[in-house]
Length: 559
View 1 (cartoon, helix red, strand yellow):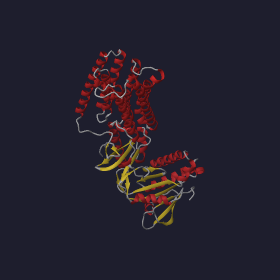
View 2: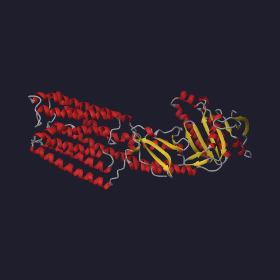
View 3: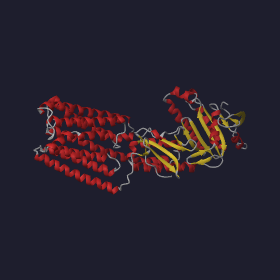
View 4: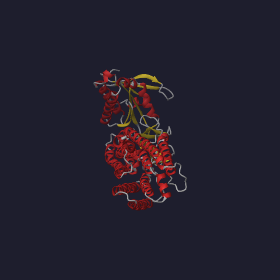
């Protein structure tokens, strides 16, 4: 079985989230280092320009801290995850900040005009980073439209500022006195910042509260840094209208710079917290090596250990031509939500297992390399453990389970769990193997047909004696069939599997029915006081011809 494939973009049909570039890794990391050196140089150059313009030392120190924080965290993120654009976006914020400061403190009219036009672009990139984290790209239409509208708004304000104040050396002033336009532009700009801040806050909080545990681990530092930064920047822009303070006073500018610096630090903390998910791999391997976590339990174990309750596992069905979940329903991996990713395992070049999980987990490629190795071993162990040749199947399900669910509500889950536990314990005691367990259905296999019968006798007695069984009218029907199914990756296939299930479906609650083949296999067996009674011939759904069925009559249990 090959390693887990890369997650696939469900909308474009190509690898997503962990796209591999043909560019050598050393080249990309060297490029990141060169970009950092350029960023550090422009930071020092812009700081020197601020000193020449007689800016306060507090303002200069805050600017250096802000710019270097962004280019440095961008370098770390870029080198650790070259395929993720977040590192390059962080560096872009540092570069834009340096260019803006240099332009505003310049005595050249054309450079001052550029400063007005790009003013606020660094905050715009920050908004993009926060909305796109951790993938480095926007995942829904609302966020994309929000960025487009805010971009147009910010650049329109910048151009209007240039035209209104006459800073463009080649453009005639639109108004006679710049002081007349300044208050209007400041008010519009304050509204723009307020809208941007509100958009970021609403989207971050919404993403956080609907996220799974892995995603929350990554989003928590960004949530904290983003909220603080948005509130400080919003206060910087709105406070002039409220208290008359200048938004670019040294103290206000320094406070906002330090607050915004928390965002890239939070991003790096998120990356590191994501790496900590690898600590669950050891526990995952232990769970799947205990022998009890077979095919039907892979999804539960993976979901618990990776912290994603929506995780799904599907096994490839050649008959259906799709991956089927544990309830037998096809996984629609072609139309996943943008917050979900899918990884595929194959076996000897053939499809085998699909795992659908939170896309935040895909941001650590090594994590799913290890998960794939563990799952591969577990699936191989399933096949190796199951007996081949002539075997006897035991199929069970709860009669009127839908009606029972309606009556019990949330209590149904605990009843279902106890019912499964009783079956698993009895099957293990009789040297059987659990093959599948989905919803209220249970499927086991035995080398000896008598063992299947004894499990049916024991569990029907257990169900009859359970305190919750009689008042709740929990009745389990069972079917037993002997055959020679084909054993493939992780389970059995063939008509014998379906025949066992159909025999079970013919039974009533509390009844155990056997096929003719199972009855023949038990002709010389000692049933310990129990007996087999032929009840006639039945037409099993999906089979041609009729089937002779036999009822297992157990002393002390209602026939």
